[in-house]
Length: 348
Image (cartoon, rainbow, N blue to C red; front, top):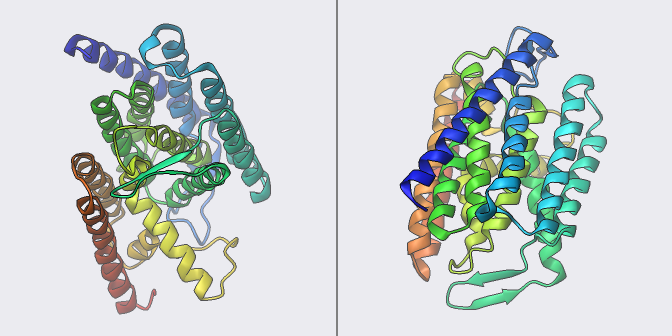
């Protein structure tokens, strides 16, 4: 890819960021309100649904890419599966922002979207393990892919509880993923990641540091879903061992927080389907940590994951495992800090 081509891509993304901003302003005027309650961090009714800007900018960009950027196109079956699934997630999650749909309806829509992606043929079929080599997953690869998409989609939704946290984390992850994909020559992942970043760049100034609007489920679920799907596409980087871990590395802070919280609540015998305020970022906020610093910290986790992913690409054998261990150690340190802060004020 030439420098001129890259500059054209950035200019196109700037236009899409403007489109996103226009849609976000429209959603502020529409006033689909998020009312405070005991488990939410905000104290005043605030519009939600700002993720509509992200969705519109992304889908518009994908349409242009399909028509004109031949170098970045997926095969038609994959492309149709991804777009139909993305539309389903966006429509159902927007309706949820408007009417607060039951969780079973949202989960059902997510499952159908994930099945559409897998049914198109886009799933992890082979794992390239250091030293061991390629492992054929067969039908288990489809199950693994379905679980990954559902988990990542809901993880981003769960983490969307403070201004700028989910949107900023996704923006950082998308920029790093675009850079990684460019190095690998994975042009669909590159271009789609840039489109996602463009939509978020148009939204984030309205949400951080002061929120004029929230992303809503239409934004958080869409971002989680698209990063999950791009992670599956990244797993096809043929020259990279364990490349299916690239997006989990970028989202290490999000995935760790959600996974840790689910395990902790399960061991405590709590109802996992019940709303709560037990995520690490929520405990840290209730323990007095500034919400802006918590969001910035998670952006840092995503950036650290991006740098680690570049190191991961260059590493071999046991070094790959050491890089993963280092990311886990960072999250363990954050957990220890939050637990101590929470215990000091009786919030843990």
